[in-house]
Every structure is written in C-alpha cells, then in structure tokens.
Image (cartoon, rainbow, N blue to C red):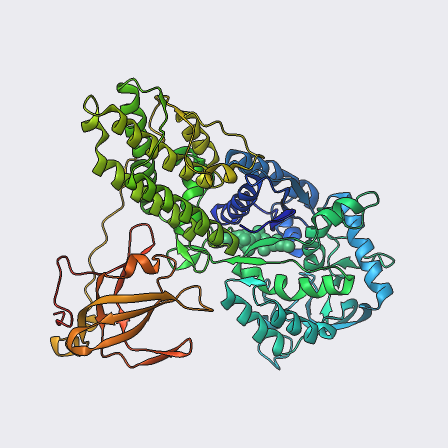
Amino acid sequence: MVQKKKFYITTPIYYATAAPHLGTLYSTVLADIAARWHRIQNIPTFFLTGTDEHGQKVAQAAQAAGKEPQPFVDQFIEPYKALWRQYSIEYSHFIRTTDSYHVKAIQHWISDLQKKGDIYKGTYEGWYCTPCETFMTEKDYEKGQQNPPCVSCERPTSLVQESCYYFKLSAYQDKLLAFYRENPDFVTPKERLAEVISFVEGGLQDLSISRTTISWGVPFPGDEQHVTYVWADALNNYITGVGYGQQGKEKEFAQWWPADVQVMGKDIVRFHAIYWPAFLMASGLPLPRKLLVHGWIKVGEHKMSKSRGNSVNPQELLNDYGADAVRYYLARQLAITQDGQFTRQDLEQKIGSDLANDLGNLLQRTTMLADKLGFTTLTVDAWNDEEKALYGQAQTVIELFDKEMERGFYHLALAQVWQLLHHANAYFHASSPWKLAGKDDVACQRVLTATCHALHTAGILLWPFMPQKMEQLCERIGRDYQPNQDLVARITQPWTGSFTIRKGDALFIKPEPTVVAEQPEVKKEESYIGIEEFVKVDMRSGTITACEFVDGSDKLLRLTVDVGECGIRNIFSGIRAFYTPEQLIGKQGIFVVNLKPRKMMGSISEGMMLTAEKEDGTITMLTPAVGAKNGSRVK
Ligand code: ME8
C-alpha cells in the first residue's frame, strides 16, 4: 500500500441557488469515501466542501426570487449541511465564498498576481444588453452578426467597451502542456486529459477576471468598481479553505496543500485542468496531484440538474432506502468513467441482490447459526485448505481494492469486495456448517469463524462506503470499530483471534419494488440481421493454455488459446480487473477467430474472447456449460 503523510481531498463548491440534489450528493459521497478510506489507515486527512455564492448566476437567481443575494444564499446553507450530516458526510471544513476570510484571501491573491505582472488592466469589447446589464457570450450569437438580440429579453444589444482586468493565461499555454506531458495521471480518467490537451493546443487567450456589470462578488482590490470573476474567486477556495492568505495559518496551509484528489463532474474539468493550474503556477504554488472527474447522473436522455428540474431529491431516497444503501449505489452503479442512469428500480435491485442477499444474508446466517448452537465465542487454532484459500483471496482482494481506490475507480474496488463475498458465500454453502453441528463441532466452528473473518475483512473495506451499517456488522461479530486506528493493518494480519457473536436484525431489507408503468414494446425491424450475416462471425470454443499480465496495461491480459483446427492463438482481452492469469489457465471460452488481426501492445491479437456483464457490473467470460471440443463452431 502507498505510504502517505497526509491526504487532502476536495469537492466542487456548489452554487448556492437551490438545495442539493443527487448529482451534488454523488460528488460529495465519492470524496467522503476517499477521505474515510484514508482515515482508517490512520493517515491525517482533510476534506473540504462548500458553496459558491458570488457572481451573475447567483445574483440573477436571487433577483428572480425577489431577494437580496446574501439572504438568498444563506437559506441554502443549512439544507446542505443537514443533508450532508444525514448522509454521514464527514467534512473537515465547509467553505462559503462569502466568508470574510475567503474574500480577504482572494484580494490578497489578486494583489500578489498584480505585483508579479500576471494580472493587468485592459479593455473588453462585446455585445451588451443595457436593460439586462449583461454581455452576450460568443455562443449567444452568430459570428459577424450585428446587434444580436439579447438571449434574455430579445431586445437588440449594442457594442460596448469596458475596462477590465485580465489574467495572462496565454503565458501559461506551453507550461501547461509541459505539465500535462510530465503528469499523465493528473486527470482520471485519462481520456478527459486528452480533451483538455487538445483544447490548450488550440491556443489560450488571456482571461478576463473582473466585471463592472455586476456588483455581487469579491471587490477588486484598489479598483472597487470591479468585482472578481466568479471562477477566479471560486477556484481559489481550495487554497483559502486550508489557510492560504491568512495570517497565522501558514503552517496549516503548508501541511495540507497541494490537494491530493479533487473530485468534480466532467462539466467543469476545463476550469480545473486549465485555469486552475495556471492560477497556481502564477502564484508559485504546487499543483494538485489528481483531478478525479466523474460522468453525469442522467434521467433518461438528460443530465440531472437543478435548472432542468429533473433532479432526484436525496431526502426522499434517504427516507425510503437509508443513507448507506444510497451511498453504496452511487459508488457502485455509476462507474466514474461514464455517465450513468438513475432509476429507483435499479437501486432497489442492487439493495436486494448485493446488500440484503450477498452481504446481509451471510452475516445473518452465520450469526444466527452460531447463536442457535450456543457458540457465543468463536475461535480456531488451525485452518484447512478451504479456509487457507479463502484467507488467500481476502488478502488479494485487499491489495486490489487498495489499487482501485488509489486510481479512483471505486466501483471496481467494490467489485473486488464482492468477489470475496461470493467466495465466502460459496464456501459457507459448500461447507454446510448446520450439517456439521453436533457431529463435528470443531469443523462447524471452523467454518463459522472463517466466515466471520471474511465478513470482518469485507466490513472494514466497506466502511468508507457504508459507515453506519459496517459499524453494526463489526459489532455483530464482536470486532470493535474505531476509526483513526490503522484498521486496514488489522485485516491484513494472519487470521487469529476470536469473534463474539451477537444476534440482531437483518442489516438490509430487500425493498418493495417500485411499480413502473408498462412501456409498450417497440420492435425495430431494421435491427434484425439474417442468418447469412450471423454466420459470417466465426466463433469457436477453445482452451486457455497460458495467460499473463501485459506490461504497461492495467486493462489487458494476454491469452494463449488452443482453438483446435484453428491453431494456437495469441489473444488480448480487457479483463485484467476481473481475473488473474491463474483463474483463467485451463478454462474453456468462446473466441471469435475471424476478426481482423490487430496490433496491441507491440504484439498481434488474433481474435477476441466473448464476455458478458454480470449483475454487479463486473465482467465474466462466456464458457461452454460442459466441455466442448476445442475448435468446434458456435452456432
Ligand atoms: O459548477 N451528475 O457548481 P454546481 C453528476 N460552482 N454530478 C453532478 C450532476 C449530475 N447530474 N449535477 C451536478 C459549479 N453535479 C461551480 C463549481 S468549483 C470551484 C465551482 C456535481 O452547483 C458535479 O460535481 O453547478 C458538478 O461538477 C457539480 O455538481 C456542479 O455543481
């Protein structure tokens, strides 16, 4: 595991224009999970979240509500904090951009950059709507269009020049590109960095960072007709929240900055991957280590958002399913690498299958049986091969879990824990301790104890995701739970010690399914293919005779496959996260053998292995139900 001296994580600061919704909860839960994972390794951790309260967007929302901006934003702070409490979000500090220490620190930042020559005064020219007091942005009108109508009131605009302050963003273009080259892991997932690089390569203009058309913002130091542009104010919260620009807080700032992980949605990656590092370079400060950029939660085709009015109320989900189940679902079901759909049915299905069944049931069956047999304390001196295998897998899972957490792929970290739970369930079932009771009590206790060890391991790994339920789980098997101890070290020890069993209610209840109106079935003739097209794909059964990791790839495994009459094939498969080579060698699978050979990682891939997604989002290979002749055609 990576040794760290400290861990500093942030969320975006959310516009204080409405109560939080599921999208904002999602980012905040991800950050909380990472913070908790570090806390249980006893790593000093700081977790910053808060609200973005200045600027035109907020001022307009206040005006629409008939309120002054300050009382308007004030009304949303308690709902944010209350919801975070209810969802066990344990932040270290909640920053508001209207906090006076933040405002002063922003003014200090501006003065500092003015002295260094990175902020200068110039003029801004654009189409302006006087009644609405707003400039049009480039996307509001056609290029070359004269006096385009205002996007709000549709009256013609006029060309206006105003003085404004610029940040010398253009001076940082090459430095940013060099930084991205030297730090390819700066943005996760990697594809999002590629988008940023191509944007920067297209050329950067200096950035206007003051406005005279609005007054709701941080007053520009020395020129109070101007207020600071909201992103220059907001991005700097990540440093002012840990002491930047505040006398007496120098030590605190030096302790936490730079941030280790900054969580955000893909909508704001450009601000964070371009402006933000450029601001920091100008201030002579180190850059954050990683931006963790997740996709959108969508409802149907659309991003869930306050403005679209399609947002799901997290309060209702809390009442219906409980905080931990929703936290689990957000981290598990929404792979950070892509957009995800939210439906209640999907959430209910996950609670039923993963939490009530795989996890809760195992705990219930183990503790109820131990209690019924009067085994209040379970302890074992020696393990058989089955338990050694379960222990071995638990250790592998801890290691892989940690790697996925480090990468920010929490859904894959969870998939690892479920590998362990599936093994533990299969072991429990195959060992049938209830049949051993009275005949071989030592063996019976051994099975129950080993299952408790597996549950304890899962319970600690899952604590960052479901803190309340996992504390209950630990209590039920008599393993006290205290954060800020190195709990991870506790589960990486050899399996020793005893469990004190307590009966209790089921940890999770399978929810009653929400009824959805039936959709008429839509059949699309044009999506059918004829048999003559199907037979073009040559699929054969084959046996994997060798398998190895591929240097430089965290996705691929290289397989050597005996495909009978089609020969021995070299085939790459993107299943490294789901299988080890040992698990694959000797297995039979289905392979497409007439796919055009493709160069991959310096070698040629001569086919494709068929796989499918499991209920839990992990990948399984397709395999003949009973042995098939190598090379036999799949029809
Ligand atoms: O952009 N799916 O604030 P904001 C996933 N104040 N995440 C979502 C989401 C969705 N449907 N909707 C919102 C701002 N989010 C600025 C940020 S930071 C210096 C300033 C999350 O209230 C996601 O993290 O519009 C997104 O980036 C953020 O909320 C936007 O929140």
